[in-house]
Length: 248
Ligand SMILES: Nc1ncnc2c1ncn2[C@@H]1O[C@H](COP(=O)(O)OP(=O)(O)O)[C@@H](O)[C@H]1O
Ligand SMILES: [Mg+2]
Image (cartoon, rainbow, N blue to C red; front, side, top):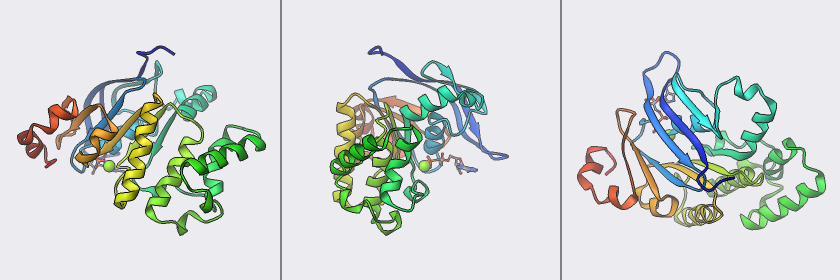
C-alpha cells in the first residue's frame, strides 16, 4: 500500500433522508491513508451523515463516493469479498454508544467481529486478552454492557471495533457525555491510532480536542456544505469565523 494512497474520494456528494430536506450538500473531499481529520460543525450540519456515508451505511442521493478505488453503492456491497474487506478495514464508533452495543456480555460484544471474520477460538482468546489489557476492560468481560458507565461503554464499543485491526477509524462525537478522565483516556487512544498510521476521522463540536485528534479540519456549516478547511491553528485563530459558523 503506497504512502499517498487515496482512501476516500467524494465528488459532489449530496444526501437527503427520505422526503426530507438536504442533510449534506455538494461535498468534495479526498482523504489519504494515515491522515487524521476532524469534521466540525454545529448540530444538524451533517457530520453524522457524512460519517455514515464514509462507512457505507448510506449512499449519496447525488454525486459519488469512492473508497479504496471502488465506487460505493448498495451493489458494491453485494460483492461478498468487497463487503468483508471494507468491514474489516473501516469501522464507525456511533455517536450514541447504546445504539452500538447489542450483545448480552462485554466479551460477546468484543468477540463478535472476530467470529464474523472466522478466526479460530485460540486466536480469539488471545486477542480478547490483548485488547482487554490495552483498554483496561478485562474485569468487565462477564458483565452486560448495560451495567457499565458511559465511559466504560465507549471503551467497550471502541475495543469491539479495534479488535479487528481496521485501517480507518470513524469516530462520531467520541467524547460526548464522558467525564474528564474518560476523555483523556479516549484521546490517548486516538493519539495512539494516529501514531500507528491509521486513518482517523472524527466528528466533533468540541474544539479543545482537535489538536489531539487531527492535523486537518473540515468545517461543515449550517448550510450543510464544507465552508472551510485548514489546519487547527488557522481555524482556531479566526474567532470571527467561529462565531459566524456557530462554533463559538
Ligand atoms: N434519520 C433522519 N431522518 C431525517 N432527517 C435526518 C435524519 N438524521 C439526520 N437528519 C437531518 O439531517 C441533517 C444533518 O444531520 P446530522 O448528520 O445528524 O448532523 P450532525 O451530526 O452534524 O448534528 C439535520 O438537518 C438533521 O435533522
Ligand atoms: Mg451528529
